[in-house]
Length: 254
Length: 254
Image 1 (cartoon, chains in turn red, brown):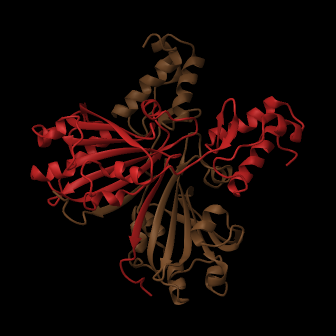
Image 2 (tube, rainbow over the protein chains, first blue to last red):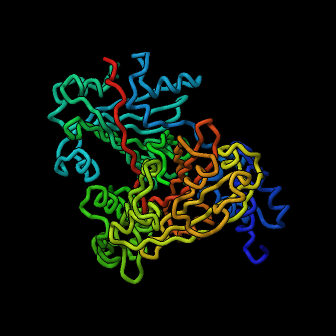
Image 3 (cartoon, rainbow over the protein chains, first blue to last red):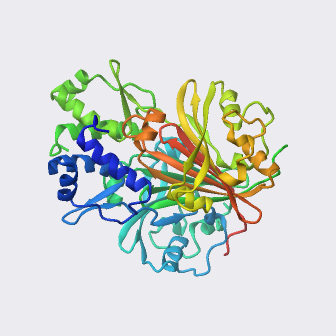
């Protein structure tokens, strides 16, 4: 240990205490002054060591209060719920009902725009790159804090005369609008990629340093295999846990 | 645009070209010299701008060749395959068969150790934090390059007299060993978290800068609801796409 620079020893010490559970999410770390005394180093050395843990996403600096172990898992995100029947309260979508049931306050902002499909969307919706698609873009908030991005995209020719073009909330849901237009989905593919956020995502979600995102592409298909919707969810790693349930389909071969 | 510092304009230019698909995975960027001439700046300014994109995980620097658009999706990872019958070739596990079928060379290193359960494992296996569990830890390689971590954990009392304790490959699979011991799994919960890697993960997987990981907890339960296995997969974001398929369970309520 002694051969490591002091700032690395400080980082390693608190990394271990967080991993072991000795320091728990939301706990405050000792002050820079206290740590400097313990390690016999300058406060700047403490700051350098703790900044490593900020970049790793383990702690956050909240001036002037100090450093805190990062709190994770603000929302359990269950893609499978999407293909279950709509919830009971039509004035609220699934996200809003889940958050309200937890005693928190959900809100969202919906914008509708016409965008050119980049390569990711074009491949999934089977349109030419650069083709115009309809984007219903929303940022979802919990207690006023931006939590995730949920942008749904539709081929323009499918939805151009429907209420999907209006930025109002649609009580029966866009899946039902598509079904009423003759494009009922019966299958979806969930794809999850992990990467650092783009500047646009950092801005829309007010992300701090060391916060990667899961990008969840949810593509819906009709019975004849045509993709009619591609939803791109951007889920900051510090605010989500993605959960699937799975049943064994047959006994393992012995 | 002109009000931005030059290094940010350079980063924004190449970020856009990558997002639009104009520059594709594996493509080489122009040399520092060429970009410096185009923007009328010093090469150090170009380096600062491109280093932003390295940190964002969009490009990689391969000295002395230059900068390249990062290649993603080296492996499609399908958790649902795990609960389907074992594949046909018992000498190879699922990972090895998938990679071999793609014409690539799979390999893995297995270690068995007794470890103390940290809070994540203790919660999922319903043991006391600090309790001893059996860990079968493996790093999986494609064409000799470390690709992901797959560490399975079992309560010690369940498996202590079984071949799970040996670091040899088990052709029938550990799920079948558990079933033979009277602990057949019929359900699993998949949980996916996203975060920056720990120093141990960076070391085991030789990760470059700006590479977040997906941590996939796969916990297997017997019919009476007891957790008997918790596998922790660590999937670098630049090497994996996680895919689930989903069928609509009922018609949406209209």
